[in-house]
Length: 75
Image 1 (tube, rainbow, N blue to C red):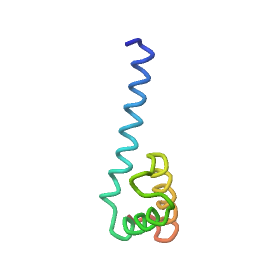
Image 2 (cartoon, rainbow, N blue to C red; image 1 turned 180 degrees about the vertical axis):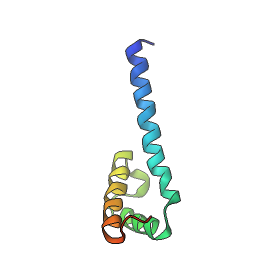
Image 3 (cartoon, rainbow, N blue to C red; image 1 turned 90 degrees about the vertical axis):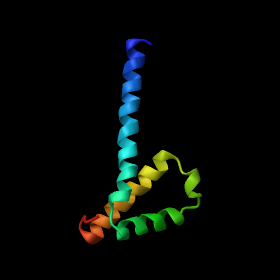
Image 4 (tube, helix red, strand yellow; image 1 turned 45 degrees about the horizontal axis):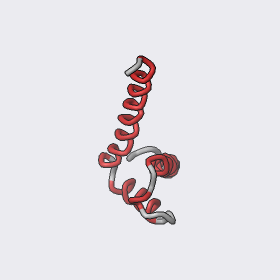
């Protein structure tokens, strides 16, 4: 593997860990937050299992902003 490929793999690994951490952090949120996020995902016109990682991250970020605006950031 070339040095450039190794760098690309390392970048991909970092991005994978970052996204997995964000998705995994949902389990640490309070019930009000997770229920609201689940409701948001349920209302999408796409089954949960078919969401891409990017779509899921987008919905999480939208919900965090919405939740924080209403409840002041306590998740």
